[in-house]
Amino acid sequence: MSNDPTTTEVADSVGGGAVSTLIQRLAGRSIHFGFQVLLSRTLGADLYGTFSFGQSILRIFHMLLSTGPMNAVVRFVSEFVAQSSFSRAKGRLIDAIALSVGLGVAVVAGVLVVDTLPSCSLFGMGGGVLGALGLLISLPAYNTLLLLSSAGRALGAVGFGVFLYDILQPAAVLLGVGAFFLLQASLGNAVLGFTVGMYVACLIAVVLLWRRVPDAMKTARVSHDVKGVALYALLAGVSGVGFIVLSRIDRIMLGVLSGTAETGIYTAASVIAFQVTLGMKALEAAVAPELVKLHAGGKQDQLKALYSTTARWSMAVTIPLIVPMISFPREILAIFGGGFPLGASVLIVLAAGQLVRTSIGCSEQILLMTGHQKTEAWNGILLVVVNAGLNAILIPRLGALGAASATSLSLVLMTLLRLVQIRRLLGFLPATFAGWKPIVAGGLSVVVGMLMRSVGLHFVWKLLLGTALIIATYALALLMMGLDDEMKGLLGLLTKRIGRSR
Image (cartoon, rainbow, N blue to C red; front, side):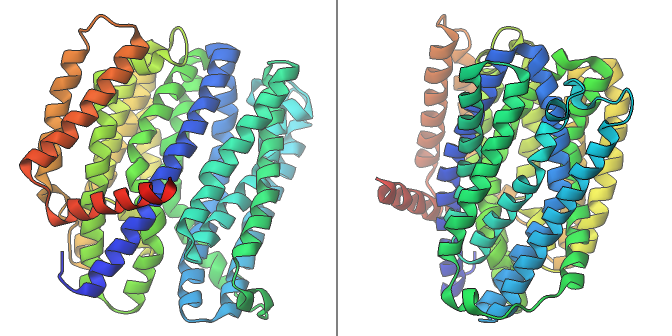
């Protein structure tokens, strides 16, 4: 990394924000995991698969209608706040929220009309409006939460922004479903509790964010640019379609082609495998506003150095997350209940694909935040076609394992494509693979994990003890090989943030 002190300061700022984000997202993912376990153990694989099917449709609409506006908020609000142009920052934020929420309301209204047609019942939940549309009714609130979170990041409060979406939202949903389950544990009450929890979280988020907005921005006259925001949001939204499809269309196609029981098992494996991206997602939340500022200032060397550093950090954090999944897939899935360990091979394949995705760091963000949203839009379109095609071919032959293979193959292809694009458009590579020490340490951790598989303990104790030994082996191996400056910097930032949280 460059010795430019400004570059070091930027990396430290991003790293500090990423560590804070990582800690919060660990907490948020734990809450989400608890929510999934509550549903799976209470409803069973079949009804859990039905709920997951409906939630996948909600998630697809949510990301379709909010990914573009979210990136517009980060891009424009970060830039205009840095320029103290609060009227334009305020206007762009309002434009993005209005666009996303308006589209969400239109979707809910459209689906409501379709659901009133004869013999039409969505999600397999019955013909009632609440049962069929309960999840989608939460769409406007869901969209608003993501944009409020993005506004917090753009205003420099990265940790606060992450709190709104990654802790407040799943906590409110978990409490909502739990409260309705006290009355009766049923699919209908799961839908109702989810919807109520989402709107409660949205109202709380509005109040909390308003307190964070600078006074100058509160009082500034609004300067709108609806057309500019909509155009950027359209291109950035198309770029996100590929990963929306990647994360949800596999479950929908599996539900159609193989049934809800297998979808429930696949969903459990997918929820676990997605945790591999935890480090990368934390870095994305922190690095995106800085990428905008460096690119706008023409600081290409710092941009390259920051991207390479965060890519190495992403890999260093990802490896110890994936090793327990490879070593104890059956034990992890057994937490969801009986029958779920059948998805062990699915979990391994999905986790491997996510590891490849994280190997080049925040590649999507660096393209979006440096003005290459059109390239990302084409990436999204290509990923949709490839992923849907692979799912259509492999699911009838292999079932859940076919869906997992389709997802991972799509991730590998997109990773290679982005490497080529970043090299061609920006003139550099992330140089992730120069960080060989975490890979060696990860290999040693795999050996320890495989040895622990033969130990005759209850699956919970085996999982806890094995994971602890894997992490200890990974950390010890890194220390014995010697930490480079970037790893020392990351460790220092982690220590500081943990110390502050006490």
